[in-house]
Image (tube, rainbow, N blue to C red):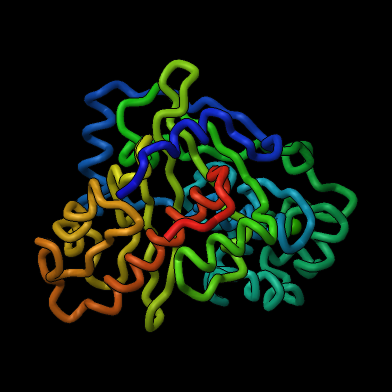
Length: 302
Ligand SMILES: [Ca+2]
């Protein structure tokens, strides 16, 4: 039922000017394939440093920070002490608040004090008055190219934008997705797959928790608004492999037609229906976020 005209809207990009534009390095086909296989199979330990966390921090604390707020400078896959405390407290906006009074890196200053004074609460060599030259430098929007190539398809690079959803956007999203919105829904990060200078696909990360299990989805959408590919980067105790057949079945679907396991030819997921509902809800929210941002219509879809 989709008119398939969303790509034209992407090309016109009526989104407020973006904060960053990064062309990620292109991997060779073979590398992409290997990375894709490993990621899908869950064999590579994927980084949990999803740019949305940095984005959320910026949105709530009104302060731009580098990934190194939570991650090791030498290995961005590893959390630093501040990042570990943040994970321990639930990986949420509230968690930033909850660890304010702690001195995560043990340098004698509380996290709150360090953030106020402009040093890094996750690095004991960065202290108020001596934050270090690296910490002070601004950072563009990180583009996790290896992950994105899994769902964006054959692209030359990727470009990230971080629009704030307006009340009108949120109205369209809420009505379309038919679900309660989360605070973080207002602050999406979108990644466009670039072929030449054209945007040929778009991807979004989505995260949710269920009974203390954490799930991270990456959703790639093609030019007609159909799902290109969905990958689970984190998938609770069962792991991404368990859900792979169901996710494969979601390719080519639209926001108007997102089957649950056992529906419309999709395989069942024994005992994991609540997770499947979460997956569908997150995908729907991603698809409607894109529609809300780019659709020229007054949001009377659906
Ligand atoms: Ca410090």
